[in-house]
Length: 169
Image (cartoon, one colour):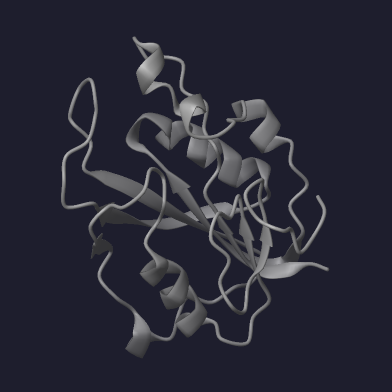
């Protein structure tokens, strides 16, 4: 099966942690940029991608978007309401990149929202359920796949190492 909507939160690998207790791998296995780029994404010829990235991984996120066959269109920011770790700035937000391939229209104008979402951060790396719900509201009849899913939601097929996969990649 191929999907109209891909929603992905890749397990980015970071190499700049100065101590073992701050390594992402303490929470879950990560993937190299090349491993993520090489994934065969089951998207339709006309599809949209919503791809989570962080500020240090912005260029890598854009590379993944392109390697999966999508063209960058826009982005939103999730304000986590609390500062986290960081070297240049203490990060308080994540970026949700949006890309399309083929002909894919944005959400209906009456449903479009601000590009800034403000939800308190929860468990490490967990994204707000409200974002997935918003995408479902925008595209209720589209086939949707969440990659690297940790918490399945109704109406979405899922793939990840913390869920029972709906599909094989």
